[in-house]
Image: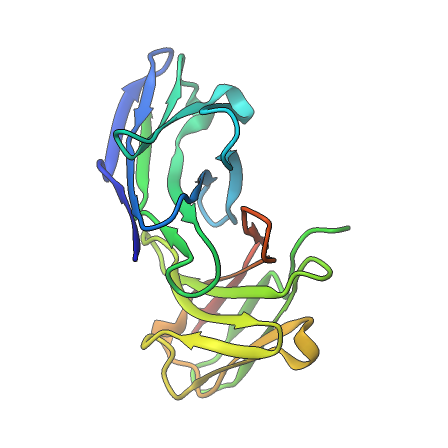
Length: 114
Length: 113
């Protein structure tokens, strides 16, 4: 079985301050892990991915995430938030085929205060 | 274009009508997933194909829903007698064994009026 837990349903930060979106996973396998961003009424856009290479992964728009196996975490960070970062963020685990092979977290809504 | 393609991107239909969506996966990907995402929620698993075989189906997939993947290439998702509760974004993803990620299409947004 596999599960993904996004620890915060909403995160609010001020523009220019750091962003931290938390994700923990549980899997019988060694999953690949992804962060997607979704703007209102849009599809999923891949921010970054961990597929068993470097544990610190850099993505688009200044985001990065660190895979920590000992903590089963894959938290998403950005040093300085921009208004355009306001969106829904999904942490996803992939370990193979089947219903449990591709698992979404429930999402974190990121709010950027001016 | 080598990405996952979904058509149409948007569909507005009247309650009670039938609709069909299409997903064209990345060429040679043998695994294909369908998800449904309602407003303010995360994507929920609907069904999974390996080649042409529909191996798993969520209980969310009522009798009004049917999915096919003839010849193991593109897939269709049909909803019969649509209801307002079917209004959602329908997402498709594909991958293949040995690749450690799945690739998503841009989704089909269905609005039932």
